[in-house]
Image 1 (spheres, rainbow, N blue to C red):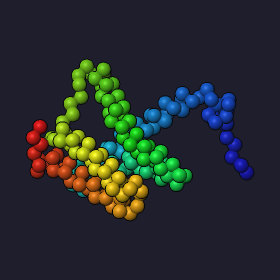
Image 2 (image 1 turned 135 degrees about the vertical axis):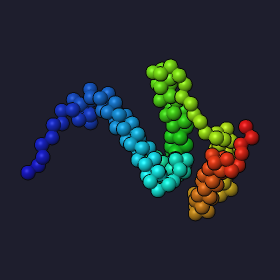
Image 3 (image 1 turned 90 degrees about the vertical axis):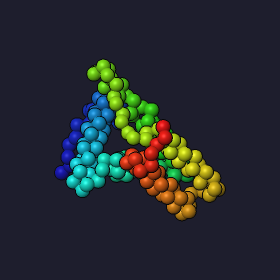
Image 4 (image 1 turned 180 degrees about the vertical axis):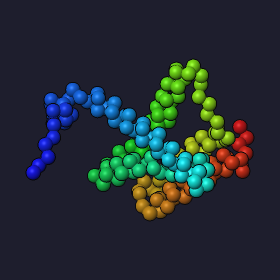
Length: 179
């Protein structure tokens, strides 16, 4: 016995094309709900096992939100489109910073008529480190003659751990940001 499905509103079919705005908005709402829950759950787990929110954000949440980029980059790279794989990961992060952060802040500002306070010790230095990391990533890729190999992979992991360590040192004022 085969299940019967109502395919009238399937957006793959010509008759369902009119439903794409509803499915698009629905997708955005699901992403928003799961994002909220993911941050809340990560915060609860961090509190339970005594991991500070800064560590949870820089490690677990960062890794968790990068998994879809990883999967798509691997699929695209295996098809022979290495440039697309790299630009996808860089482009998604730029999109997150230039759209994903400001749009909710803009909506909050419009609704409450006050700005969102972003309070992080050493934020200027963290942003500087981020740009330096980008420079080191490009330099390390160039040093490995633009070929992805085990040495470059190890270098990338090392750079990530250095970034996390230095960012946490700024956050906990082990290293004081002069700005």
